[in-house]
Picture (tube, rainbow, N blue to C red):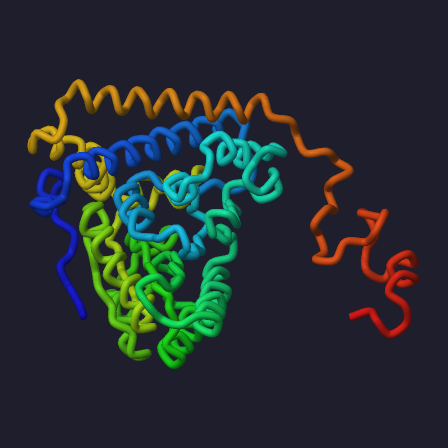
Length: 368
């Protein structure tokens, strides 16, 4: 199954008519989530500039429709593996905004206890098994998780599935092809989603890939691929739903290419000087958040005042998240080595494997 339709040329035309059976309440909720993610990411950028956030920081600005559509399709029992551009997905998956912001601040109340920062959001309860700092690092573990799901349960409409997010630049690394080969060979319940924002850092897809239609990459592994307009939240949701349904019921892996466009550089420290003025203006015209807002107003789903109230609410929620992060305690230095090893050393959290205490506890020949 393939769909080679590319993204529309302008913001006003980028969103097709919503299905007639789509309720206004659902569409308004989509906008509420998109507005909140936009406000959160703008504040994260501001907090980074004020040195409240350290390390790397990659934003979902311009990708909000893709984020919300994918997360709406994902079931509560499904597993999610993300890239390092993971803030928006974490929020849409249901993580507490204050704890996500606290993780960015490196605070002990963060979703990863302040140890992961921007690139490593994690929530086992919500089956969100991390953002990954290494390009493509999430793909083999996600494929392994899909293998585990297949081995422990039968296929069916209530079966679990895996969604693995990746960027366009990731499609040229070995782990991507090795994993898709095994997923196709073993018929694993996994959907790989390529977020194609057209630039791998500063290199365009056309300059990096001999075949720039990335959804076709699955053909060699007998995995159906589909391309979808990433600025259309409903289209993204529907494509992801269909692929996840196939993964659950028939154990057919899927590949989705969501055509998106980041509004800023690769990370907050990237000035994106490699982008032309025309390219920047096009990104602004394609901005899915104001486009979706305008469409909902034009279609009568809500009026301008209601839309503004949603935006104000988003800002207030972000303010509360920042306040929580600022007031949260830093991690205790003595906890630096906690959870460094799967089997902790009793009464000696700072001990390393090979230290005398550990050797005495495990006994001769038991060290791995």
